[in-house]
Length: 195
Image 1 (cartoon, rainbow, N blue to C red):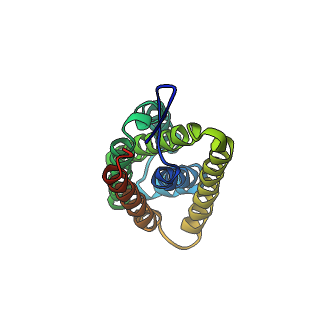
Image 2: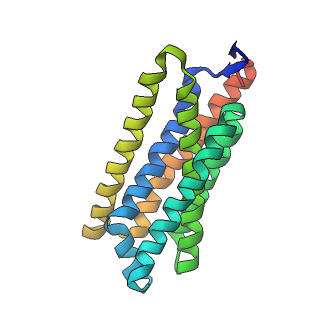
């Protein structure tokens, strides 16, 4: 743990778990922005407006999670990023197993809140990287953008071949990976006093 001017700086490697989670969250947002939401709407027999409601709930939850992730993630990195990753994994499971609109809404809120918090933590950690700040912010922004594009590609594959439930099952290992990386980096930081 490096202290300069009253500011606590985390080791740069602690940003990896939150960055993976942020890319996953962007991937799932991209999937919903694409044709996946229409597939969900048709499968669950929603009205046409419900497609936009699901996307707005998801995006609104991301927006709500960003600021707390940024603010509290700087102080309690592993706790915030780990909790956010758990929310993402729970949301993915709920969406993968959803059979009705209520579960889709709940899954969207979980994924959105967790995704916003983990992305806020990643950008917050990158913002305190000192001389490497710009490079770290660009790298995390690129990972999030790549996740968004990946989500759009997954959404199109859901329309063409695989079902929308499978898109979420495919995202589950990445969510677990983000959780594992965050937990391991938090454990290493605690053992080396870099919490």
